[in-house]
Image 1: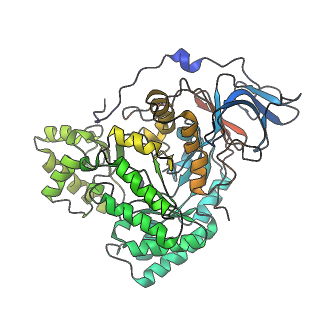
Image 2 (image 1 turned 45 degrees about the horizontal axis):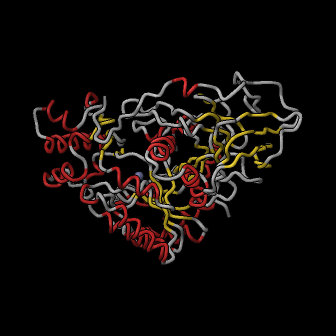
Image 3 (image 1 turned 120 degrees about the vertical axis):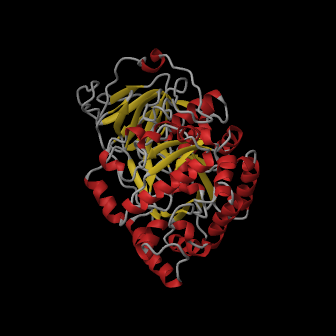
Length: 525
Ligand SMILES: [Zn+2]
């Protein structure tokens, strides 16, 4: 069992509550390969009847029949199905716009896991990759590859600042870029924007972005702005220099005049705890002054990253910094190794446990572990360690989730060590909405769909309305619940019944259908 601080106990759901069908097996269009396949409907249309529709605007739910034809929602209202329509009886269930994950790490895995069950099983119909400053380069080739072998979900991407920096500066990146190098990065960014990138992403706590000056980032953001793009950022600090980092992203929005979004928003240090309302006030003030700043976040008290990210000065041998990390950011029993190639037996253990095994203290253990993993990383050129760290507290998470401009994300892989990859959206709907009543269900659906679409610049998704693309999720608000944990991070959630992407059923009752109707979503001109 994982020993992560803040690891939640949750009730074991009765299987009957999850698996009871809503009624007789409905006829389903595009359910090829599923046991519910029936004779092909004559009209080619599907009508979902009897659901409570939450349309994504935040309005209260209303009973309506939703008619889908091809990849579009064509009617929302009282009209009964016509002869020859396929009918899905959704009585007792809630129908919402497909959820949009605005911070996904599915970039590479999408080709190996094209069903993207981690996403569809949560009701996610679109993933946004190219995050934290890292994107596939060049995007045009990535997009064409996706179009040749489409996955189950829609995919959009940012162009990563770190990727551009790496292309221009190579291994000589531990310094500020020269004006000429910034110009070269701009030219690459222009190419990525023309390919359809949503904008610029940065990862300013990671190499190589951490060595950039704020001016470099703002200059590149101006290029994104000239294409009507946006800026999304893993900000320069989520702990020790947090307020300065928030000021930096606001300043990028002000100078470059483009929408900016804080990635996986969190207050990840003890001395920051209890300051969610101060953060919200700072963001609201920036908005009132004309900066379109928004955020995304996942609903857990623990993050997943590297040990090295805890040392912003990269002074891994500094005992004072190591001690501060273990005192202020994550305790030794709150740092759970999920990868450690120099000593694979450490996986699943915390720094506290590893220190005991080594007969050492946590500070020394942390320093020695980074020493060996950095040596291996430099030798092999790949990442060799990752860790789940518990650094947040519940009242902050609840207040931030409820901020009206905060949409949701997973920050997850399609198969990764953190349960957020499979559990984020059902965890919000189950734990935070139904159990904790942090916000109304209609508001949570708005944030997961229409707000996320607006924050990514999508105009034809995120709402249930005639003319919108038919990305839809049908779920049971009484039972929807995440089941993934650090010990079982790939457990699919309960209560998500059916998911459509571009009008095609991709997930039903615990399983992917094998259909792959996902599209590349290039930036809207
Ligand atoms: Zn990040």
